[in-house]
Structures are given as structure tokens and as C-alpha cells.
Length: 173
Image 1 (tube, rainbow, N blue to C red):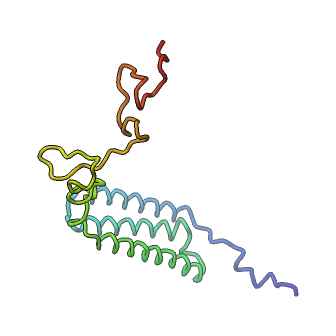
Image 2 (cartoon, rainbow, N blue to C red; image 1 turned 90 degrees about the horizontal axis):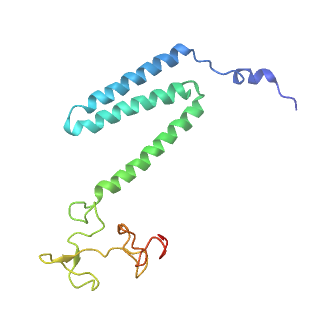
Image 3 (cartoon, one colour; image 1 turned 180 degrees about the vertical axis):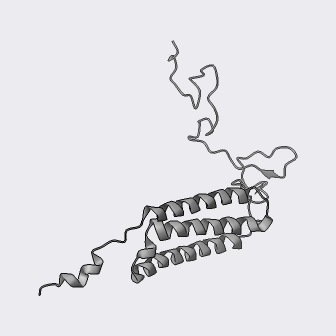
């Protein structure tokens, strides 16, 4: 069965975009970038994020339509490209719904690994409770049972014989 090349004639050419269009889109992107910076200098309260997102979506749409050429795609390809963004939005929505549903105020301290209220006294016999504190600090992790705790700097002066030593005895001589 021989194929007819004339039936595919419209699929062999590509849409040629004039450089003027690219230049105009580039200028729009630069204007929107300066608008983003300008908007960030004002404290608009709860409107800061929606304004920044609106500008970012506009810039992304320009890149998507013109630089990626989606504006001139076939309808089926446009549908597939847009579906990718729809599913990305769904994933971001699920992530944000999980994030905002957490009890940050009553839960643990977000900035440390210590749970809210610390470790109750008497639950970890290895931790000493400082005077005036009702809870113990979490244990400092060590690389080995007899080693210097992780994050402890090496002593100045070259102690090379003790636990956690960085060299060998007699290396300075």
C-alpha cells in the first residue's frame, strides 16, 4: 500500500515565528520582571503572594505559548500540554492542603527536632537536666561511643591523642 505524500503536506512545514514576536515577548517578560521587583517593595499584606503568583503565571504563560511554541500546536497537543499543568496544579493543591491542615501551633517546634515541651524529665536517663529547666535537651549525636560529639571543633594546639583526634600521635615532629 503506497502512501500519498500530498495528504501529509501540511505536516511537513513548521511555523516560522518572526524575530519581532520574540523581541516583543522578551520585552514583556522584562517589564513583568521589573513589575515583580516593584511589587515586592510594598507591603500589601495578604495580597503579596497572589500578586506575585499572578505575575509569575503570566510570565510562565508567555514562555509556554511563544518560546515553547504551544500557541501553534495542533489541538490534541495543546490538550496534552495543558493537562500536564492541570495535574501539576492538583499535586500542588494536595500538598498545600496537607501543609495547612497540620497543627503547627500546638505541635512540635518546627525549627528544632525537640518535640513541643521537650523531653519529659525521667524519660531519658542519659540526659542531665540543667538547673531551672523542667525538661531535658535531646542527646548530642556522636560518631562513636567514645568519640567527640559531632560538630565539636578540634582543639587548638594539636591534641592528637585523645578521642576524636584528627591526626596521629607524633605527626607534628
